[in-house]
Every structure is written in C-alpha cells, then in structure tokens.
Length: 202
Image (cartoon, rainbow, N blue to C red; front, side):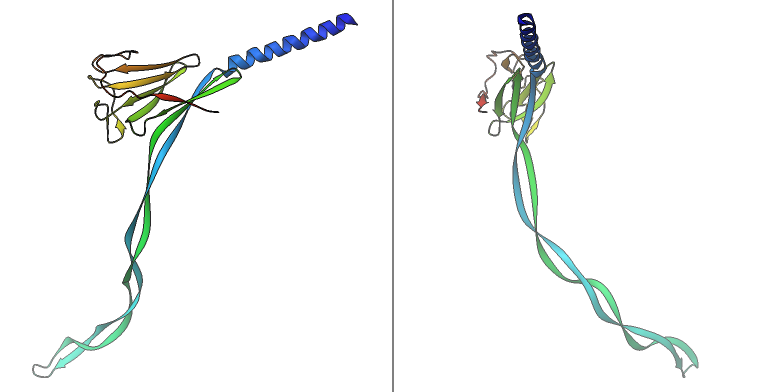
C-alpha cells in the first residue's frame, strides 16, 4: 500500500514538473502591439441639390412666305417640359481621420511570467518594427538625424543617425549608430537626444 502511495506521488510530481518545463519552453515569446494617435479634422463640403424644374422651349412648324410662295421652318409656339438640374446647394459636415503610430508595447513572456515595455516616440521621431531571429527590433529615426521625414522612416544608411531597441526573450538592448555602419551600445558620433523605453505595469 505504501509503495502504491509513493508511486502515485512520484507520478504526480513528475507530471507537475513536466507541465512546468513545457510551459516555460512554450512561453518564451516576444510580441509587439502598435498604438496610434488619431486626429479628426472637420470641414464643410458644398453639395449640389438636384430637382425637376419646369422650363419652356420654342416649338417649330412650317410657315408660308407669300412673297416668294415658299415654305420655311418657323417658331409657331412654346411648350413646357421638366428638366432635372441643380436647384440649390447645401453645406455638409465631413471629417477626415489621420492616424499615426506613436508607440509600441512589447510583451515578453517567459514561462509563467509576463513583462511589458513601451517605446513611446510620439514627441521624438518615427519608429518601425521588424523581427530579428527570436527578437523584435524597434528602429527609430528623426528629421534632425536624416532618418525620417514627414513621419516616414527612410532608413539608417549613409551616415544617418538611428536608435534601435532589441527586445529578446532573455535580454533587452538599446543600440545606436550615426557615422558608423552598424549598431553598437555606445556610439560617440550619435548626437541626438536618446529615446528610452519604460516598464509598463500589469
């Protein structure tokens, strides 16, 4: 009887251990959520109002010229008809919604634990998201650094200043580049104000 209890306890412990290991193996993931700031602009647009209007037009017939004893086409009266046309105008309120990505929230799941980090670049410049191996890269640029214009990221080549966040399941790196060709943790040629990420409470 005691052997059976020990055996059952051992099986239960092995099962719990296997579930814990499996959850940790499956749970090491990194994902990104995009947040946007949207601006709604209202404006008036003039629209035509159509309707039927009664109009008149000449009617033609054949007239006789007694002077030279000939017939010719002439106006012999008028008639009414309905014409579909613009009868008025009205101002219609319209709106235009423009949205722009302002931050990325990175969720890192390790086993049973989850942590979130946010890169808010709404007042800094423009960032884009990509995947590097098992990591999510957030690469950012500014107009001053030559790597963004009118809210559009245009790359980090040819001496442009950029900053990169590399979020991996087991580490987070903040990298820079300006005059050099690759990203490093310290680049003395990077002269822009540095962008930081923040921890997000659960």
